[in-house]
Amino acid sequence: MAQYGKTEYWEERYTRDPEPFDWYQRWAGLKDTLLDYVQQTNQIMMLGAGNSRLSEEMYEEGFKNITNIDISNVVTKAMSEKYQDKPGMTYAQMDGRALEFPDANFKVVLDKATLDSILCGEGSTHNAQKLLQEISRVLMPDGVYIAISHGQPSYRLTYLQKPEFGWNVKIFTVQKPMMGMTASLSTDDKDNVHFIYVCEKGEAAATGNQ
Image 1: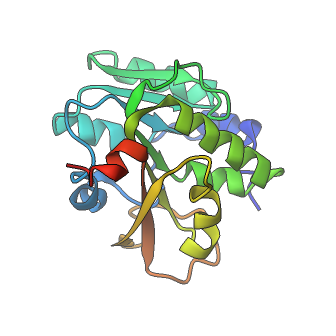
Image 2: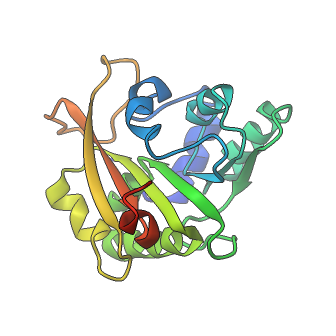
């Protein structure tokens, strides 16, 4: 079992294999759902960005304010250099459980497989709670956290529907791409869908996202 919850695993992996890599889905598979919740002018944080092409694909479609963070120093350095000609697209090495941002800093936090990775590791329940508390803290009062996951609602809603967050959680599904296009974290992935958990913070939920 790969140590997805460990920093060392990711440092070694990105050193060994610097090629672009996407877990689960590309922008094309997500945009129909995400465009209802993410606008081009939004301040977006991409959590656990790795060397995914998702930020680049969104940038090309007009999302010009994307802060990418990852626990791996190797990958954030490489990606900073790769995208240095794209103003508004930044990369920083950071632990999602201890974000170095002020409160209410982002309208959108996007997470493709980061919560899943943490739930694969030691101390998963505690670490997932720390991650979600930090996400909640840096989200604006009307912000939205979007998690793309292989985890069934029966497993993920336990974490996402904690009263302390006050999130209104909507669940969408998206067909898995053809094998070879993207990768999965789970070896026992029998479903043919990925789940998109859209977690709207209090004010957005109250106004019906108008």
